[in-house]
Length: 161
Image (cartoon, rainbow, N blue to C red; front, side, top):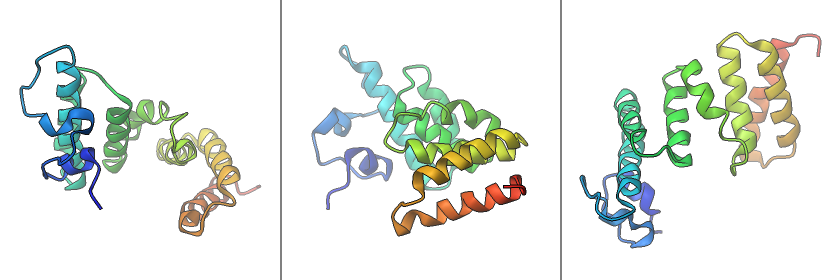
């Protein structure tokens, strides 16, 4: 299977597809009305690749650079994940809270709950964990480890439940 252009670029492979114009995102290619958008995407792809390779601080730095152009949903998502991996919960929280309405909305609740728990905001964590468990109670078996983790967190944070 051919990887999506975004992932191909992040892994350092040239994009074989002309989709979204990601194959031509060379550094400094800022010509035309979409130049800043291209630069933003190019930097986001680089940051995603750095994150995949475990270079978290470098990924954050690259994503900070992206902010000069445009903070897209993709950039917010990657930045949120990177900041979570670095356990920089307070910084991650604004990005996590913007995920609502995306395909992974309920997964966002799980991550928000983790952030709130790490910051000691147990009431908010319980609210998000409970909502996540309710929404994903019948999720596919491969997703059940997250549901079980959330159930355990609920038991830990609210023993009277």
